[in-house]
Length: 425
Ligand code: SF4
Image (cartoon, rainbow, N blue to C red):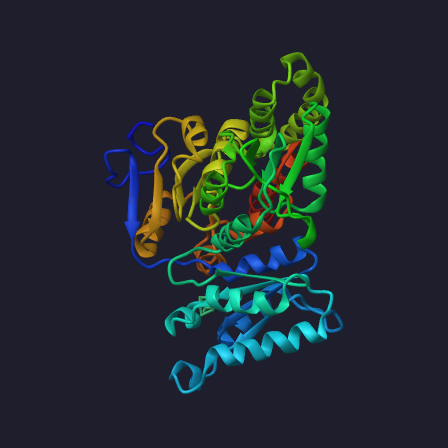
C-alpha cells in the first residue's frame, strides 16, 4: 500500500507504512454491546455481566427487553461495598449464579462477562468460571470473557466471546470447513448452502446455535472468517491446529465471490464447478447493486473508527459502487486478516487506526464528505452541522453478508443520501 495523498481531502501526516495512527479520546460503545446479537445467536446461552448499574442500563436500553420475555442476559451488580472491598464479591457471584441456574433450567451455557468495574476490583472471572464449572458441569458450561470498555471497541465483545469458546471445543481429525463469526441464521444458511453446493463436504459454524452443538476443531479444519474483528478468536483456532484461509470478506458481489473462492481452492473444487454454482447468485447481487450505483458513484464517504468493518466496507463501496474514500478509520488494523482488503483499496486511500476524536472531527469538517459513518454519539452533532451520517452500529445489526444482501448493504448507504436530497427539495 502506498502512502500518497488522501483522495478527496487534505491528508494529515502518516507513518512510514502509510497509516495514520492516533491515540486520544475515543467515542465507541464497549464490548458488552456484543451481547445484543450473541444472545440471539446462541439460543440456550445466558450472558451474566458482572458490572455496575451503568452496564445494566446500557444493555437494557440497547437490547430493548420485552416485558414478558425471559431475557438471556442480565447484570450481577457490583455494589459500592464490593468496590470498597467490604464484601466478598466471589461469594455474591456464586449466590447469583446458583439462583439463576435453579430458576432457569433452559440455560446450557453461562458466560460471565467482565466489565470496567469488575476489572477495577480485579475480580478473577476465569477462576470464578472454573469454580462454578465444578458445580454445574456437565449440565451447564460456564465460560468467561471481558466486555469492558477500558481498552476495546464494541465488536471486540464478540471476538472475546468466541475466543473463550475455542479452548473448550472438542478435538476432531475430520477434514472440514469452519465459518467463524456470528451471522444472522438466514445469512449463515445461504452461505453454507453455497459452500455445500461447491462440494465441500463438512461445513460447521462457530458459534453454533446451541451450546451442545459447538463444532469440534483440529489440524484438518480450515476456517474462513466471516467478520474482520476476530483476531483473538483466530489466534485461538490457530493454537488448536486449524488453518486460516485468507480472503476478502463476504461483502458485495466481488467480496462474496473471493471469500467462496478461497474455500473452493482450499478444498480442490474445480473452477468450472465454482463458476457454475456462483454464476446465478453473483448475477443477482450485481443486479441488486446496479440499482444504487448511480446514486452512490462519486459520492465522498468518511469512516470514523467504530465497528472494525470499515476497511472491507470501504473496499466494497469504492470498488463496486464507485464511492470516493476521504478517510477510512478503524479502531484496530489487523494487517494479517486485512491484507487482501488493503490491497484492493484505491491507491493513496488514507487509513487511520485508533482515534483522537477532536482531530478527526476537524478532518471531517474540512472534508465535508457526502456521508460520514460514525457512532451514535457523533451522528447528531454532525447532522446539526449539515453533514449526513450513517450509524456504524446499524451495519453490525443488519444482515449484510453474502450475495443476497449485497443490494441491501448498498441501500444502507444510499438511504441517508436520499433522505438529505428529499429534505433539501
Ligand atoms: S463495561 Fe464499562 S464502558 Fe461498558 S457499560 Fe460497563 S462501565 Fe460502561
